[in-house]
Every structure is written in C-alpha cells, then in structure tokens.
Length: 281
Image 1: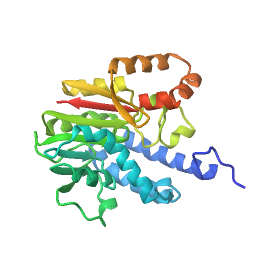
Image 2: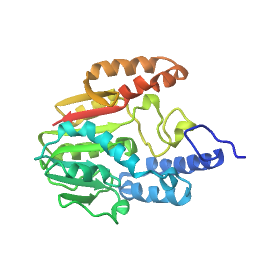
Image 3: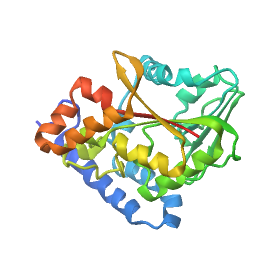
Image 4: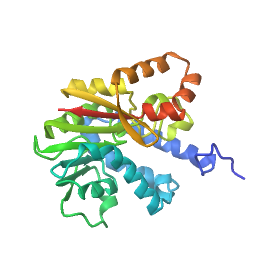
C-alpha cells in the first residue's frame, strides 16, 4: 500500500512529490520570465500543470453544491458590508464566477477580470455581469469606473514585479473613495501551495506570500489613503488595528520556525493572520 504524507492529502506520496516537482519547475519558469513573456505564461503554465498532473486536486476533488454554496456565503459575509444596490463591483480572478454571480443579485453591475474564460464557457451570465480577459496585471476598464474591487486568494499567485503593476491598475479604475477588498493567505503560517509539504517558503504557484505589514506597505506605495484590516472569530468579521496584527507578526518572525509555524497555525491565530485588507482610494 502506498504511503500517504498527511491527513490533508488523499494521494500517495509519489503523486504528491510528482505534483510538487512539476509545479516548482513551472513556477521557476514564470519567476525567471520577462514581463513581456509573463503576459501569456500565466494561463499557459496553469494549462501545462493540469495536463502533466492529471491527479491534481482541482481536477479530481468533488465539491458538493452545498459546499460551494457555503464557501460563497462565507466570502459574501465579509464582502457584503462594502456593497449597496448602487455598487459597481469588479472581481479580479473570479474563477468559476460563483461569488460574482451571487453578488450580481445585490449590486448594480459586476465585472470579472481573469486570465482565462475556460471555466465559465458553459455558464449563463446574469444580465448585469461581464467578463474581461487580462494578461495577469492589466485591468481593461476605464479609470474611475469601479466602486469596489474584490480579490480572493489572488495576490499570492502574481509575480512580485506584476503585483505592483496590477495594484496600480486596480487603484486607477477605482472611483475616489473606492475600495479594494483583498483576501490572501499569510506567509507566517504558510506556505499555502503544494510546497507546504516540503518547504518553509512557497516555491509553487504561490509566487509570493505576504504578511499584513508587507502588503500594507505595497498598498501605501500605490497611494491608498487608508488601509483597514479585519479579523474573524466564529464566522464574525471585525475591524482590527493593523498595528496590533503587525506586532503579532513581528513577534512570530523573531521566534524559531519550529515554534512559530505551529503557533501561527492554531485556530485563533490562523483566523487573525489571514490577510483581509481594505484599501481606500
């Protein structure tokens, strides 16, 4: 019987190692590519990964309709306070667009911006939804046209050099006072891609994982006037001082990895450390 590496994985260790080696190889190609090359590599390398790793969880995992609905509702609980009937919303990296379609019931207009339309080809769009394709950093919408931009577990997939460019483009499409609601995992309890089973730092398609402090500085460099952080406890989201979270992160970074990683992965700290930043233009 094939050995299994931990309870989170249902594949034998040989398949997990194969997945890891292939994804790391493809991620290295993306990291080493020029800005011009990356404009088409984002989509093509993901296609290559799925072709070479047919046992990839995204291809084999069966998610029930109930699980998908719960995931959408969980995200909506955080996003909802920032929306109104007059909101023009843009989701960057909407994937299957389940969240975007749900939000479309509540707002004036929703735009999706993604590198591929493959997963939505067979879907029927709501009348107030439009999907645009991007090269991974461009935002093909007019300046000052969007009230709220939302992304969920997207920033970690963007090349660090492209992250600043994409963030600047997001800032430009926002109306004055508009919001960028960004959710991304924290590197202090990562890595969060396939390399979590082998490395201390993400080496797969999470090209860069951030802390609150690092991402807030990036937001500030673009020009966001205010940056708000939010925590979560028992399904309830609450405003949390960014300075407090930064102190917690600094403390964790000063202690040995063997102690910091399990501590940062406890239920309480994991809920606090997941990055939920709202930048105000």
